[in-house]
Image (cartoon, rainbow, N blue to C red; front, side):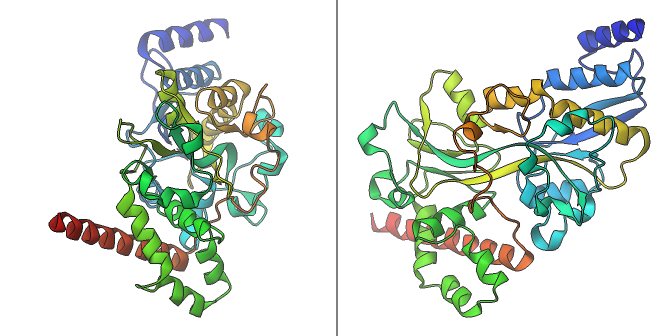
Length: 376
């Protein structure tokens, strides 16, 4: 065992995480969000696999996760073994993602860290197929807005989401483009409704209210159009930072990186609250044998204290494990995930409504900006 460990360690040091001096015969392909899996993590897991005699190495695929449709298409292509899905993606659009996954044996001897996960996160119905669990909780956070406190004084900070529509913020706020339900959600919240109001109308078969909400001349579409028209930036995988943006929307990890460079971005505590999300580890259907065992070893490492502490300290996320010494967002709010702002899955009808409203608002905002430019 000692000689195997020395060989594995040398290999990790010299070749960046290979399993043995010869190339491993199998690869465990991981699909993840930017920043979730580091080179050091890959090296550590590959060393664990080598120590245990697995001729398998971990490889993160070149494409980072972006949104639900993109993740579905890439997983469906057959080039992924393990994914880091946002929980509500699993049952979106008639549970199409669910059909690409397989149940996880959470009692496996290769998952000893599972028992230390926060109990309220391990049995969430939107991540289950009957009693089978299709996910392992990994880490979460809030879709928040951060102000550059070097240029935004305390007295100028928005108090309500409604404030984001004020003229003073035109061209100075960024919004996420790829995950459109967040913009739909904050617009609904600014109008005094649940961010998931569309989902609720569809579930309750309230067609008349849904028709009114979708109306071309309706208040909602006007407000959503103005949001896009006023945006200083619309980002996909991650927010950009420049001198023109005084408020930036973010999942959190990007803010930590900027502040480490000397910036001073601080979360705005809107009175309406923030929508929260949970990212998970998932096994793709068809994973079996030694590769399935390797996936369990990989997952166990990622819910262990070392990685869970890193995502709290370096990514400003909420750890799913109770092993961490500090977990500020949960420590300060024990009901962080148990509230009405936990993003639910959108079915096909709701998703189509959200996409239609978004596309119409984007077109209308471009038309309005063109007319304004001509007038000037």
